[in-house]
Amino acid sequence: MTSTELSPDVRAKTSALQTMRTSAWLGWKIESNWTDPLIFAIYSIIRPISTAAILIVMYLVIRGGEFGQPDFVNMYIGNAFFILVGAAIQGVSFGILDDREHYRTLKYIYIAPIRVPVYLVGRSFGSILVAMFSVLITLLFGAFFLKIPIVFSEINWGLFFAAIVLGLLAMISLGIILGSWTLIIKNNAWSLGESLGAGLLIFSGAVFPLNILPAPLQWIGSALPISYWLALIRRALVPEIGRAYPMYTDVSDGRLILILLGFTLAYLVIAALVYKRLDFIARERGNIDMVSNY
Amino acid sequence: MALQTKVTRRSGPRLFFQTVIGRAYPRIIGTQRDLAWLFFDIFLPFLSMVAYVYIYRALKAPEEYIGFVVLGSAMTAYWLNILWAMSSQLYWEKETGNLALYIISPTSMMAILFGMASGGLFATTVRALVILVIGNWLFHVSYTVVSFWALFLVFVLTMAALYGLGMMLSSLFLLFNREAWHTANLLQAPVMLFSGFYFPVRVFGFWAAAAASIIPLTLGMDAIRQLVFPSGPLLGFLSVKVELIVLSILSVAFLFGAFYTLRLMERLAIRLGRITDRLG
Image 1 (tube, rainbow over the protein chains, first blue to last red):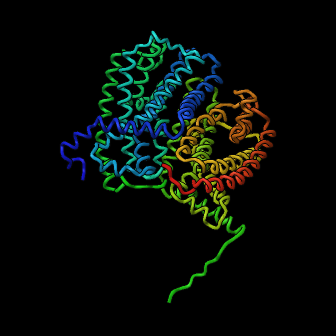
Image 2 (image 1 turned 120 degrees about the horizontal axis):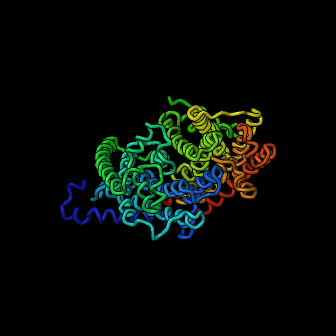
Image 3 (image 1 turned 60 degrees about the vertical axis):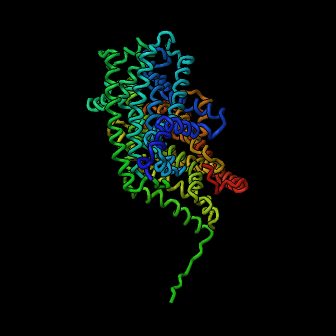
C-alpha cells in the first residue's frame, strides 16, 4: 500500500511537520549517541579545528602570523561556514546510504505513510545541527586565539539570519539533488558527498575569491547559491572586512539577498524535479532495498 | 556416474600466499571492473587538490608549494586507503558477515591482512599516480630528483610502515561498533594537518613534528620533499638518512604490532562476542 492509498485521516496524522520532527530527532540520535556526550563533544571540536588549522598553517608559512589581515579573516569565516555546506549536502545522501545499506530500513520508510523527501530532509538535520556546533566552535577559536575581529555589537543580525535561512534551504536543495543521485548509484556513493563538497570549495569563493580561477570556472561559481550566501555571511559578521572581499563588491546587501532568494527558489524546483525523476528510476531498477556491501 | 573432484588441501606458506593473492584479487581486479572509480577515486579527490592549489595561489605562495600540494594530494590517497579500506575493513567485514567466515577458515588472519594491504597498495598507487601526473601537467610542477634510489627506498619503507600501521589499526577497530566510522573520520583531518600534507612539517617545531612522525607519512613525505624539490632540504624536518632509519624501525614495529594486536584483539573480540554481532 502506498501513502496515496491511505485515508485522509491517516495522512493527516503523519503530517509533514511530524515526519520532519521525528526524522530530525532520529538523525540527531544517529549522529550523536554512538558515544558518551564528552567524547562526542571532543570529536565535534577536533574535526573542525583541524580542518581550519590546515588553512591557518598554510597562511602562516606564506604570510606569517598576521591573522587580523582582511584576506585571512575572510578566508577563515568562509571556511568556517563552509562546514555547513558539507553537512547539508552530505546529510541527505548519507541518510539514504545509512538507511539503505547499514540499517536496511529505507524500504520500510518508503512503505510508511510519510513523504520520503520530507523524511530525508529531516534526517539531514542531525548532521546540520552538529555542523552548526562546529561552525560556532571554529568561530570562537578564531575570535579567542587568532583575534578574528568579530564584534558582537557590530553584527548585522537581520542580514545574518536571512542569509542563514535562505542559504540552508539552497544547500538542502543541493543535498536532495545529490541524495537523489545516491539513490541510483551502487558503488563509491559514500565518498560522493565529501568529494563534491571539495569541488564546491573551489567554486564557492569560501577560501579564495573567485577571480583567482580561470574565467569558465568563475561562471560555475556564479551559478551556485553558496558564493552569494558566503558573501552575505561575511558582510553580516564583519561588515567592513566582508565588503572588502573581492567578490560582488558593487552589489548591495539587498540585491545579494534577492539573488540568493532567486537561486534558492530555482534550486528547490530543480531538486524537486531531479528527485522525482531519479526516485522513479531507483524504484524501477530496484535500488531502494539494494545492499551493495560496497 | 558422479564425477569425483580431487580437492587439494593447501597448508603452510603455500596457503598463506594463496590467501594473500585471494584477498588482494578483489582490490586489484574487482574494483577496476567498474570504471566509475575513474570519476569517484580520481576526479573527485582531484577537486580537493585544486582547491588547495588555488588557496596557495591566492596567498601568492612560491610555486614549490603548489608542488607540495600535488604531492600531498597523491599521498592523501594512501592515508584514505589506510583509514577506510584497512583500519575499518575488519569492521566492515564484521558488518557484512564475512569476518566470522575468515576466522573459521583454515588460513591465517595475517595472510588476509597482507592481502588487503597489498591489493590496496597496488590499487591506491594507480590512483595516486594518476592524480600526480594530472596535477603535474595542469599546474606545471617541476621536480629535481636528487637520488632515485633514495626516493624509491623512502617510498617503499613509508608504504611498509604505513600499511603495517593499517594492519594494526584494523585489529584495534575490531572492538568498535558504530564508533569505527567516526574514529576513521576523526583521524582524517588531524593527521592531514600534523603530517604536513600541504606544507613542511617543521613549521610545528621539533617536538610536535617528532610526535607526528608516529604516522609514517610524516617522515615519508618530508623525505620525498627533500629529495624532489630544490628547497626541500632547507624545509626538511630531519635529514633523509635519519628519516630512512626511523621509517625502517616503524616498518618493523608496526608489522610486529599488527601480528600481536591481531592475536590479542581476535581473542578479546571472540570472548566479548563481538565477532558476529551487528549492533547497528
